[in-house]
Image (cartoon, rainbow, N blue to C red; front, side, top):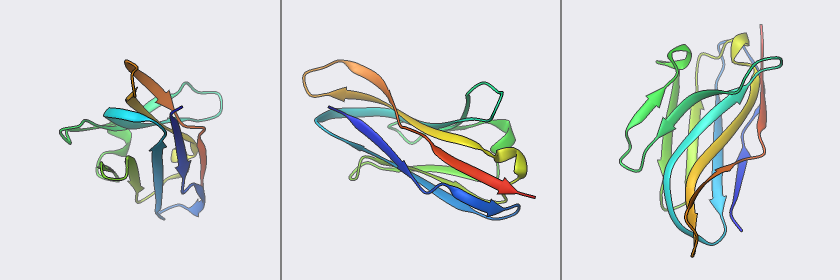
Length: 120
């Protein structure tokens, strides 16, 4: 069974920083793309940042220049460094990853979400 477990959320003042982590565990054969999404109250879930196996990066326009996604393949972990946080960044942040469990095809897994709250 594959699981994604996020950590690092919390409450921060505007202008502050947080670093989110998401570790994949279980019987994993291969991990392809990994990414971060967020969902604010009353809004749809949106892509924040994504990283491929070749470390190609993609960011939402709203976070470019402030957020940085990275991954450590030795730890099956993806990170999201968030700087210059704004109140509008407040949301539940979810990581996802395209993972092939041992003996299974690729499947998109989601973490349970971690709350990020930015106060003004």
